Image 1: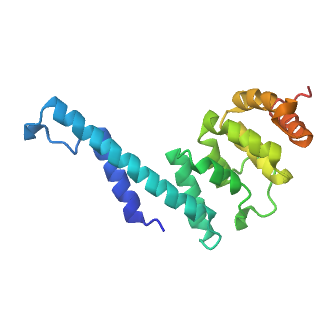
Image 2 (image 1 turned 90 degrees about the horizontal axis):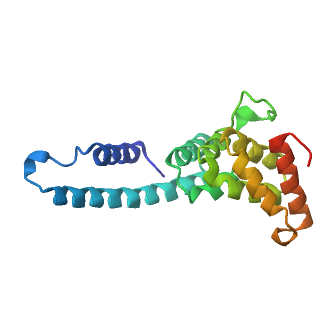
Length: 190
């Protein structure tokens, strides 16, 4: 489980490495020493990001974890843009949230997982198109399309979906869903 002090430590490491306050210019370090130090700090940050990202994915996927912590984990994954989390966010796109029961088409309400997925932008579009095409849930397809619109990734998604409609790229049902996604995103029948 991720605790607030871990998040604070990560924030401190990030600030130190980006603002250069971990290195004291009065230490007599050469420019090369400083560069090596920055590289070491960046390597440590990368390893820490992977560890934290993997823990956040575990929290998001854990049905025993309280819903607010799962939502917070999803939101943090979106802010981190941790690439391995895209599949976890897609898996949890329909996460049951008590305050959203019965709400589907209200454009003024953005579900936290949809917002987190949207933060990835064009990078997540191919995975979202594939998930949309393979999903048997109309609610999941609606939320996936909404994440593409919120990410302003409709053009990328449309291009990818067009490629997905070729017979060698999926079943007839998957190709039909890819064509439907294009209609949803463009508002026009082909």
